[in-house]
Length: 252
Image 1 (cartoon, helix red, strand yellow):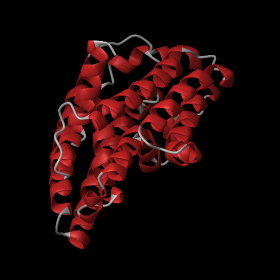
Image 2 (cartoon, rainbow, N blue to C red; image 1 turned 180 degrees about the horizontal axis):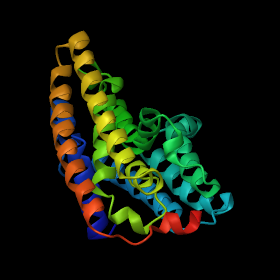
Image 3 (tube, rainbow, N blue to C red; image 1 turned 90 degrees about the horizontal axis):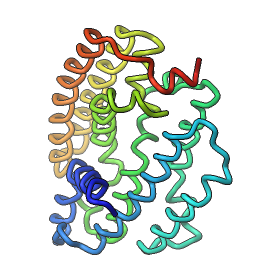
């Protein structure tokens, strides 16, 4: 794995609080064998993403080598071959959404929470495997407890990557909403969803209390950060003239 990609994966793991999870399981994050294997799995998913983001014409047979590597990484992590489909079901679904772009079926036709739930498929998979290896974590937080944190951090990724994603075939909801529906629509959709995440997280906190308080605090911090980033990047999109995106070129 090259240094740039390793740095990207490590930043993802840190952003999604994997070091804290391992610490709470009584394990050391840095240099841990599980983290190395999870990084390998994330690398294989990134390779699949890169293929989809770089090629408009995608044949299913050309995706098979990427999936072979994903399955191999899962096996190395102790996931039985018979369970591969179950573990990858969210990735299969998001891959469909990526392929829908080729049919001019854009993400904005979907419910925004539904879309971002599947867009965070890779992190959900990785965390599920962490829980498999350290089941004691389940007594503190269920996998479902991470729903709103995963949603807001995935939204943050789209808002942060909005300029970079102009040059790829990417299902960036924010970017696609901006160029297809306009700046005001994108602002309303994204800011409304951020507020909805904050509200639903607080409702869950009232129901759960206890250990969920930590995840809720993390979520609310990202709500604030993402809201501010949305304002900044939306202003840049409005005030600076950008070329037609790669996806727009294909769609037209």
